[in-house]
Image 1 (cartoon, helix red, strand yellow):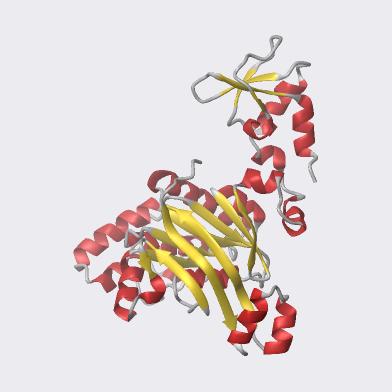
Image 2: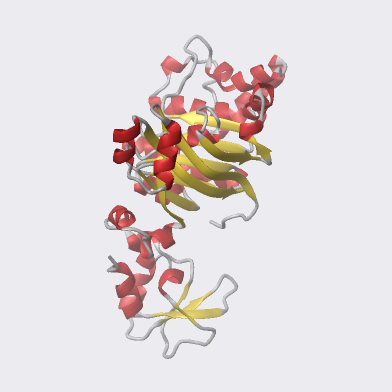
Length: 343
């Protein structure tokens, strides 16, 4: 997936301290004090610690970390469901922390949608009325909002289920209703807070596939929270890894797998299926000349898993070509071995 370049989300020096002496906690945090020491001295919990990043328009940006890492608090700060203790958040050009209640409500109704782990559907409403709820809040006429909601239900694989009630649907189907509801208002930004973590593995993968296909068609800007590294690898253009409220590393899957910035990130990546994730481009030696011998040609976007049988079946390096069929490098046995055994 290509990462677009136009920023639509700016988060700058975001801190969130719950309880205690927040000013003292911020001062200690700025001096580098660990979370445990800050809590012991101030009584405050530093949930998000000096987080800065940007998300480009149309990008899938995945924030991951273990429970307590601060990822869910961070996404709530981005939507201003929780007020940051300090910092700056800009969405779609608007400085979110400077907006009054009416302006903030307008951003939430028209620019941003959220999908949570818990579906939050109204049991007394039909599926189509649940999906259309955001449009109802906007004041759209009933016939028009029903039409759009039915279109969105069809897009997430729920064609024909509009007149049922949520309790008649499986967990995976209910989560699809939540996704359709988020999409109905045609948001510029979608926030997902571990939306698939309560689903069984097969349904979870199906929902990931649904989101990948949706993103292929519509190129929404997505911030997705997860504790599952495999899920992050499937969905992300870029990944941010959090620990103790701070960002440990931000980068593409290839960057994080091949150049982990800290021992914590390295621990996350150690058991990742690198050959399935990394491409020929990650391991090849770049050159515009043709490789010697009569070795097969591979494209630079081919996974190493797919290239390995060809590589192992030849004593010479493989010729690598770009998307236009032009030579751009060679893939050597030693480079692949070094990359896949990197620790």
